[in-house]
Figure (spheres, rainbow over the protein chains, first blue to last red):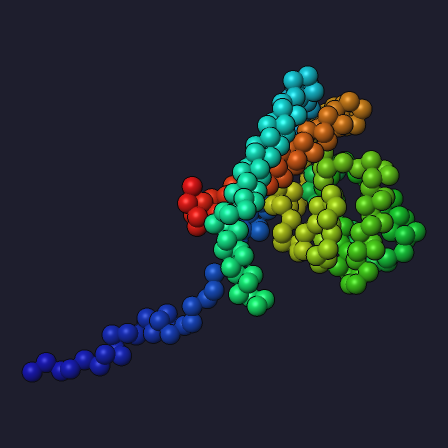
Length: 111
Length: 163
């Protein structure tokens, strides 16, 4: 008859590992750029400055000459006005359902 | 040699003269600057208005390098870049400086050249254009939200009372 093995015996060597409380993993997001090569960072910075230069030299000129902003603002204002008009038309009619409900609610509340 | 990583400055007094003296020590547009006004506690808003006045007087722009302010104030609606904690600053400029090797120095020199170029052309001609462009886009954004609000109201009414 085989001897019954002590279950703890087979755990020798692993006990500490299992019982040891799990260490919290520290977030390394903040230290990420510090681990980067400085060369990479400088290259990125050069790229960023090139984009700024491009924005100023090429795009700003286009923006100044052919600005679309005013047209877009006008269109948005017209759309907004139309929607506002629609809303007030719906709620402003004397016998509209909205007015009836509102009158009913007011009467119930203040009577 | 100034690498483009954060330069920190603690503002210790809410007095306008002291703040101006502290801000005069900095070189703007060479690297991103972080002003910490957390030690001022309830005087932070006062200090913010002095800083804003100083920066607009000195014509310090967000390009090529921004100025960030660490402050816990929740009642500021100006154009300064405010963060509540140092960890919330963009990671891009967060690195340690050290002696550069030949290759890095070559890129650094190119960066300096580009910076000089940007500094020369930025305030004179293009800043008003970019400012107008950003203001226009803010207006478009607000108009879009207004439109969305009225659209929601209308669809709500139509949902209740039918089209």
